[in-house]
Length: 399
Ligand code: NAI
Picture (cartoon, rainbow, N blue to C red):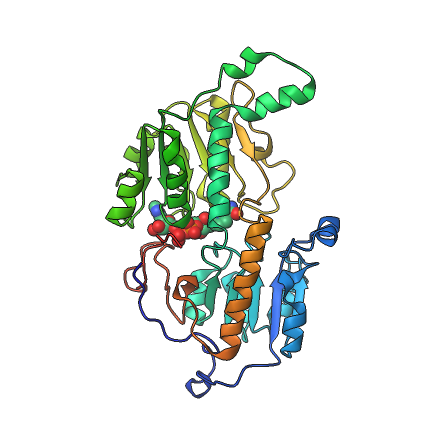
């Protein structure tokens, strides 16, 4: 994987140049973390590290380093802990599972903010263009949960294609009518499956689908896979999105959310899907138009939709994706946002956050793969095509 050399990031940004590469470890920093409440489960299960109770396992360490560490789930409105404490925080830790939405307005007011760390992967809840303008760095723990998500995608494809959810619900109800569920159950073998976005997750999905004997694997991505990687899984690139979706029986979405992907799957594009196709989105809810998807499922144009990401999180109780069904009463594989927060993943992203902070405190360079926005510019190539501002590698990585 190609990587450009990147200047050390730690302890830089809005400070004058003289203090930029100080080797004295920084102390007395205010670090704010917005995480989700884990309740009883988090008290019983200490490996639920991404919760307000277990605080990413960082409390004692940060205290011993002389820093103030504030952790809360309270994130909405001007009186929230998030908005109040952000004003003088130097480091903000957030999680995509309970996103603290860092808008331009909030960032402009957070005069001391220098570093945002996403505990996980996917930093769209931060206004990245504002981060560029304000010279606030945005890092995430790249790769920390990509296998977790890829497994969930494969599971979701299978549960839709095989009509699993209605079959299980029938059993719970005490019924037994095989034909009712078999009438809409298929094999994955022989189907065409395509991924929008063939980065770390998308590529892992392709790898995991090879043994299923699908008819063809396709991908759509402005960054082509390295030739050897495409060859290894036998994936063919389709450069036009409408052409791409019209060839797929199953489409899976694996791109970040940015200006170029918000609302990408809308009523117009859905017309080009094969009738009866299945759609799986574990990337970000807002990549799909909520109502257009619900309508397509209701009409049967989409045979099903599955995923764990929603346009607002937590999703309101009456969100149509909770209950939408195809004309045969199935086709809904929605769950709360958890595919990337298995206990295995939580250990990886908690460790990753700690090592980003260690580098920052010590003034050491960060792993370039973790940098979404560096000082005043995008370092990732995955958040849209920004020829003038970016310079690093394709998201593809087997590591
Ligand atoms: P990555 O950076 O390795 O790959 C993203 C790929 O999407 C890149 O190859 C990029 O070129 C491509 N892409 C970007 N914009 C595109 C567009 N308009 N059309 C086609 N391709 C485009 O990222 P990774 O690790 O694979 O993660 C992808 C996304 O998955 C994250 O940004 C996040 O939103 C989501 N995610 C969801 C999780 C969950 O728990 N549901 C957990 C982890 C990630």
